[in-house]
Length: 141
Image 1 (cartoon, rainbow, N blue to C red):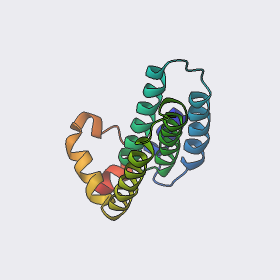
Image 2: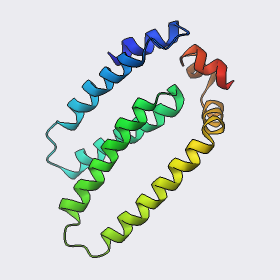
Image 3: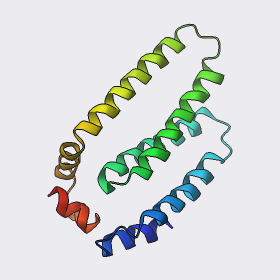
Image 4: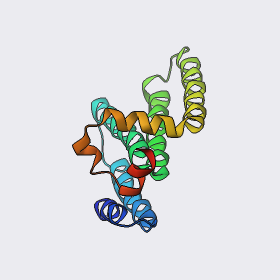
């Protein structure tokens, strides 16, 4: 469904792909989050996948990716605080500082969204940039 949403997004100027992205992300992220993970490495990979979703949000300019990605990262941090660092005295303070930093990054991203998107597009090779949805590439190029 995400692939279909991407193809629709590339071919149309109107936003017909919103609901496809939303339901595709619900299916993908829901299945990913419900997978059995018995090792910390798999859980860390889950966190990395969610970070990649957040980065994809910048390129595709779709908020649905950053919402689901941030829920996954917060879920992973919740797992760390509940299971891994259960008896640690320092972890709540570190987690609080990380939360404040994440809020700061979110505010900075909101203020400089266009500049960040343009910088991300400059880093990406031209061949890959052509694969992005047309209206989003034209708006930032």
